[in-house]
Length: 325
Image (cartoon, rainbow, N blue to C red; front, top):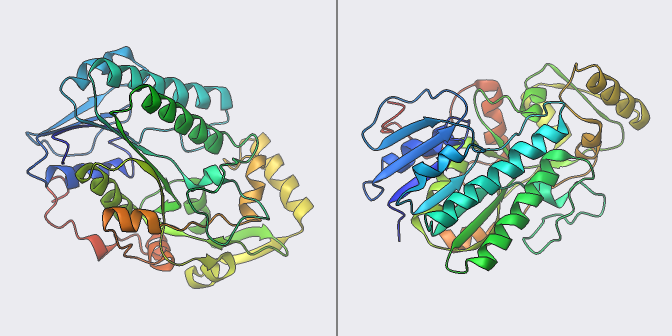
């Protein structure tokens, strides 16, 4: 059953701004309330209400009246050199949203987690499945927060068993204009890497990820689902195809460099991200494919090519989108 009224946090972000037109193009969805602390670029629409508020603000509760589905995308993704603030924003914000869901009896929650919850480790299987234990890299605040929010959502559902809870764990999401750390690295003419390591990469286009999120609104299915393409590509091949010069450094030197640059605030890559340059995190998304009748469209390389082209992926055309026409 399609949720009639959707509250979407992070609606002005890279992914949320792509989800909004998909929801509004569906006549079965009566209203979308977009909440974000950032300004909205969307054009006015009679079924869309943009709200500029912090998800930690108790005032957001009033926007949950008669809401069927919360789609929670708001998250501090980029490193801000303040782990305590990042944790407080992500965890306290989620807690505030759950209080609103409880008060207003919201029956469906969709959360965009991350494949980073599995951790980058040498013993990782070729493809992570949903039953693979989550082991976020110690002190990597982004993945630690994602696990903490997943756990809190599971606790909420245990206390409210009639709630449909859908947790998605996507691989790297990329798209034109993206400013996340790893996409920014691949836009440069060169990329420092660790000598002797060539981790496999998976990437999904932002429009494909938006389509995935839209599908979760259309079907009432609870569970944890990996999201990724069917292929994976070694970092060396990614660099070759994107014409990025790869400069391998000894592991100790590479580690010292990212520590120094981060400490001087010349880089947003924290030292604990070192493992991301060593070991792969690739996923098997067949559970979501079978449950939601989804066929991932662009391959990893086709998604990554958008970084250079700066053009959208045509696989999921949004030419008729009501907000980006």
